[in-house]
Image (cartoon, rainbow, N blue to C red; front, side, top):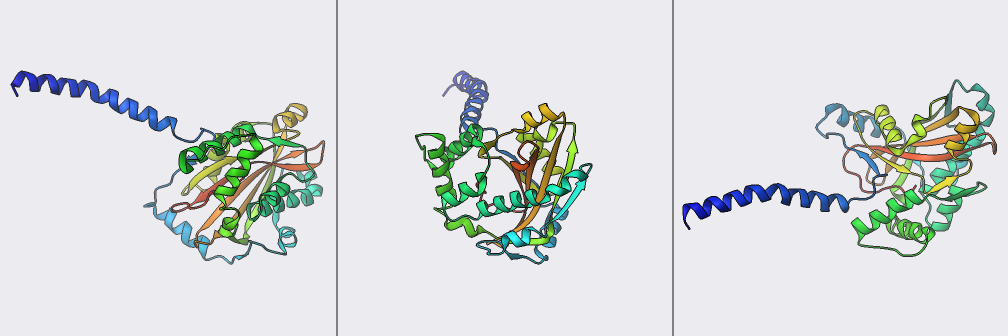
Length: 284
């Protein structure tokens, strides 16, 4: 091959390589799950990150999966109120909301999961959350369920939990290191987007990886409706330290908003702070 020919080929490769890289990047991006799955990684080489994992695992944990006394134990959950003292009278509603979420997380049947999430509340299925679930099914499970949103949600739950067999993954809970913070704010930042909430969770556990989820359900009244009506909103963040069947401990952070018109705490977002690799995603 002559020198001129080799030179031309080299120029073609140099000019074409950025185009090829751009095409690969676009294809890869298109096959990622929808953007309302927010995930922030933490470096495993960070010594504080490793120490935190060890500190979590030295705590006392009690059975969570299939626990018969879950409701009674949640009654002892420490709740701290900031600038919303009047909501102390509604603490039983908040404990009930936390209990329902924990029961849904460890449900062995889809109907029990669904009932624990929506009992006695006005709700619809959240299209954005279901779009995320469908994207995960397509990208990672080569499954593209057709039908309505309820059908997609059921297929997602069945696959992620292996028809309920993986419900026991979230195995035990440390009550001493679990608590709830309640606050009232005249800013909407925490409810504006899943990204905002995931960033908030990262600030609580800065040496961890964090992945965030939006609720599969939209409850009425929504945070937007409450804020528009009241010009302020009360938020509750439940920090629940759960150990898995892999002997890893994850703080689960649930966000609720207070709906004065129906006197109920309604769940909005979930964030999981974690160390090491994650094996199981919660169905929220």
